[in-house]
Amino acid sequence: MTLQVDRARWEVDGALILDGVDVTVPTGSVGALLGPNGSGKSSLLRLVAGVGGAVPSAHGPGRTSGVVTLAGADLRGMRPRERARRVALVEQEGASDVALTVRDVVMLGRTPHRSRWAPDSSQDHAVVDRALAAVGMTGFARRAFPTLSGGERQRVQLARALAQEPALLLLDEPTNHLDVQAQLTTLDLVRRSARAGTTALVALHDLNLAAAWCDHVVLLSRGRVAAAGAVEEVLTPDVIDPVYGVRTTVLRHPATGRPVLTFAPGAPAVLGAPGVAAVG
Image (cartoon, rainbow, N blue to C red; front, side, top):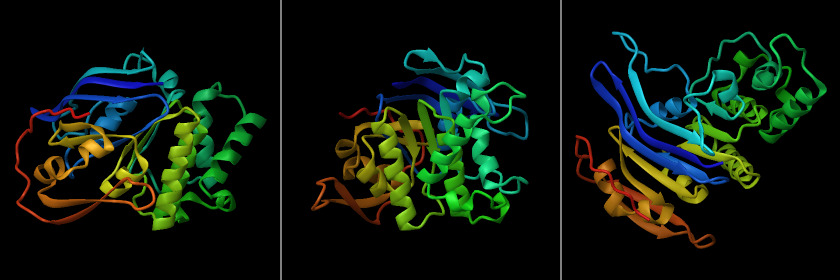
């Protein structure tokens, strides 16, 4: 199911967090959401997921606008339960002090699929078993969630999202806290989910992970789209250097042919809202 975001805007206390952002992620593909800290990646994912309704503010909620559709269906107009059957979000820092076991946390992903007071069904248990196995956490099922490391908690939250059986998977820095092997395993899982028909939008800091695993790239800078298009067309020095304030050299992976980026210090990134550029 294709994700389409048109003119996404989020304003808090007169400051624009997102300003006219457009994103398209085709069915069964993995889109990378890139940009420096504070560029709006997490805010965009939360707006698409419809969580919170506004960025927390000392002066009250913010205001959002724009159109977000999945296979033509208006996600922003759906009731939360209906939207949760289609969209799963894994945020950077989920609650770590919940008094639940790992299995209980993953079972929360089944909530949108059953009536409020219904007990867990055999299908629910089977889905949870598959999700735990997919992230390599089967052996941790009885562990108390707060006792896990940051990386382990991240994998459990991914399993919870998979247990929702979503059509759209939104991931905010899913490789955060993970070692190299776990990073690759996680992105391979996202890639395999996409091949099975799930559309994914993944916020990443590591541009090389985006180059290796993603199909399309949306590069944000100060709440606006600096560039969007195919990996090979966005991850170039002309696009990357002004946004990140670095000097980029692009090499080619000898086995895959995909871009491999190296960086050197450059001029500081220019502050202010960039123009919108679509490449590819």
